[in-house]
Image 1 (tube, rainbow, N blue to C red):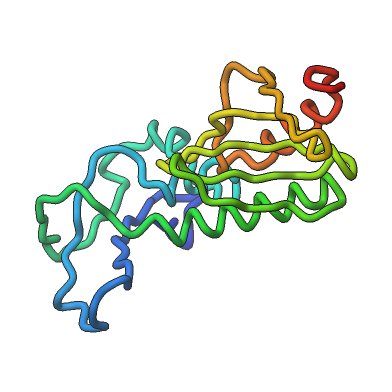
Image 2 (cartoon, rainbow, N blue to C red; image 1 turned 180 degrees about the vertical axis):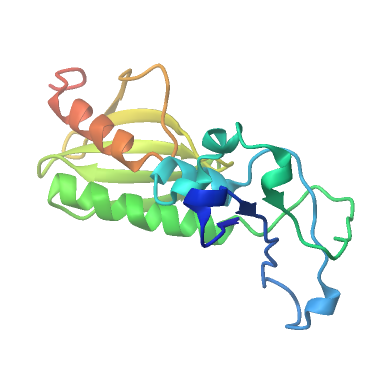
Length: 188
């Protein structure tokens, strides 16, 4: 979606469909858009990050449909239930989350694969760590937060939030890390 050059005067919105080039060939004649209901994971991540104001679609809901310019060529529609591969989006979000947690904890964050998804482990002290169990399914919400004592070999589940954030909400996970770090629950 783009805005006309004179957006402030005519408030026109132009819709441009994208082709994700995750195809077996670079020949776009093999491509056909898949129309899915709901919000795409990519749009969801952009909206949460506040990186692109044009992703705040609610602010455009008052615009008359006549001011929205669609492509003149008819778009082919195919049935389907899958869009572009989510793994690259997930990988990028996990990398950014690890970077922010490493800044917060001044240490190296570990990433471990698990049957339910993955686990991020961030140091608090030499023996104490905070572990986040993260769901493998989009939008990758925090399933459980544990305080670990690696010297004693113990873990204690911590109930710090009733609304677990997803990896798209990196700031909330960093806040969760700080809350877990400051919490006396699970400390010996």
